[in-house]
Image 1 (cartoon, rainbow, N blue to C red):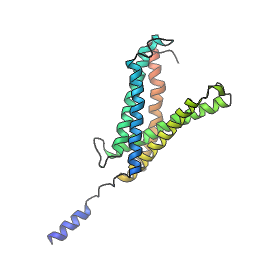
Image 2 (image 1 turned 45 degrees about the vertical axis):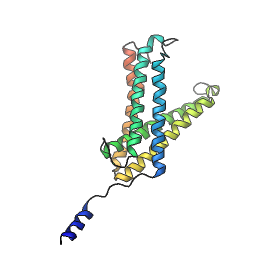
Image 3 (image 1 turned 120 degrees about the horizontal axis):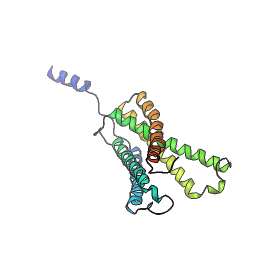
Image 4 (image 1 turned 60 degrees about the horizontal axis):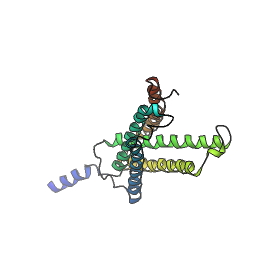
Length: 200
């Protein structure tokens, strides 16, 4: 009787989520490495006083604020990517990490698609000229499209592993444009009002 009860109890316990596949794990680590790499660029800018001279020298303080804000976001992106491929949830509840993953996917997707629209506008002569489009710019946009796709893979894999509801994805996708708007519009506007950046 005891062994039967024990077996039934063991069956009732929720099974631990399957480990992510090798491909997903590689994507998670590459995404984290990309975020750290881009964060290092911003740190180097600040350590070398890149914006202390030149046309925007008087706004160096405002640019520094934006730079460190971006460093924080990139560090968070790296942490989210690594946590998504961990065997078990750590530090962040699964639903909350799911929101962050879907949010990262949506934010990068909106940013990359916005860059594509801008490039199309340049090619069509609507904003700027086609001469402004170079190989470096195209590579930059393609990189962010790939990074967005990578976070999409991580979000789907993580949601399936932990059986997250669709509302988690919806919250992340809808919340991302709001965060992106705060970063690209609200913060620079505030800094401009304080005289730390040029008026938009």
